[in-house]
Image (tube, rainbow, N blue to C red):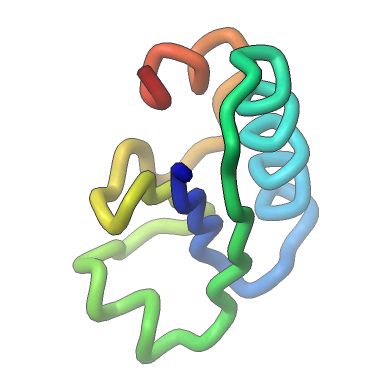
Amino acid sequence: MKRLQVLGPGCPRCRKLAENAEAAAKALGLEYELVKVTDINEIMKFGVMMTPALAVDGVVKVAGKAPEPEAIKAMLK
């Protein structure tokens, strides 16, 4: 099971990233858990300086933008 973590305060771009990540995981037929990390101290532990960010299994894949589902699919493989 993949663990998808959306790092950000809950802004519109954060919500869009969560939607896109979920769409990508569903399109690939993956078992996944989507976690929204909104605590700034937790976000800082990932070394992220710009939000939103997406971490897959604890590894940051993208920060500062909300890629489309097609781009996120490549990050999930």
